[in-house]
Image 1 (cartoon, one colour):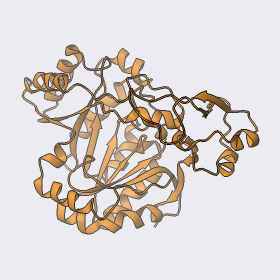
Image 2 (cartoon, one colour):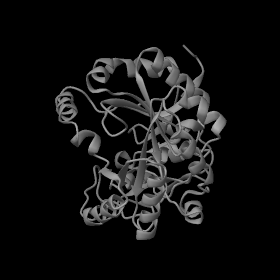
Image 3 (cartoon, one colour):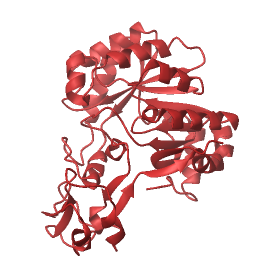
Length: 347
């Protein structure tokens, strides 16, 4: 296999919402979008970076003493949502915050930390390294119709590594899925699609200007690529729409999305209502999160969006549908959760 290196943040085994069946999801690092709601903020930057697991921090000062850029700053430790309790120490005690603008990513602070509060998010791996983990669950892929999903970040931001990884999976008879924003040149994307069975394609906003405002890039290329992908008979495409308060959940955008998906001849759309966990990742990465932390998207509003989209003749499923609509898969996951962890963290 290939010995070239890629950079990943995590390998999640027994993933049930990243394509059909039981899957292993590999999260590649790096993304050209800058979505304000990104649920994997540790995957945005291309290269490894310091990840601050602040619940373990006791403010011993070791990291401050070795930092050559004076990037370690004291802040007050606050609860992330009303009523949340701290893991260590008392709420209000000082902890360290990393000034990302100053940080050199030299990782001297990581070596100096004795409490596993500072770790490196992102690891250089080979295709062989990843496939050793992926191949462990081949029996479950065969039983459930699952396989390998590459996600991110944006997996096509590391095009050669993504392609080599998908090729390796296909050589082992493992089906493959690409979780993508579609923001990549068609020449690159087309090569990757040659080794892809399923595409999980995000439609974040249909309005071009608002797409720029909320993601940092226009949606022209994204829509153009989608319209090319659905013409391929060898790839099954699933449209996924994140549902975010005040971003893309206006009736105008929901109707525009429904009309657009219908015009493509697609029958199904997956809704992904915002969940309460992303804010925690932002705290760890050291980035301000612009949405209420600890709050799920209101079920009533999600159902309204679902009803509007269904009026365009679409079958609309919520993000948990991969599991809920497959009792056999749900049973397997419940059994395996008793004997196996749900993720292999390589940070």
